[in-house]
Image (cartoon, rainbow, N blue to C red; front, side, top):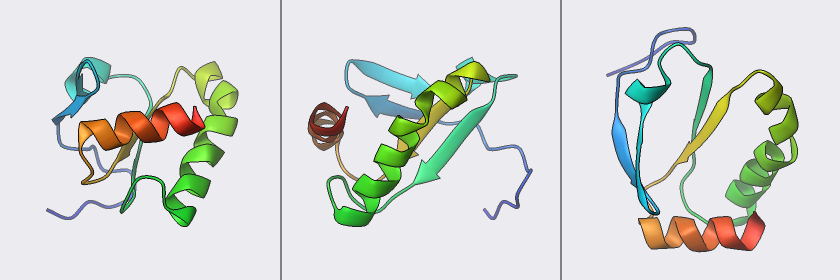
Length: 84
């Protein structure tokens, strides 16, 4: 399935540490979804930390940021713990 800028995202649910993230539970709210190849690699870390550093700006708009990669939940948890 191909999406263009501005298209609504298909609803999805993915596992996260301690539960799951469901796009359906955020309908009507701004959600930033970004995809990256792997946790804790130079480019991906730079990208994720840029979102982290700008989090207050996103929170003003009540936006949620979701990063998606093929890594497992334990890898995501370690990555999040390491970089906040």
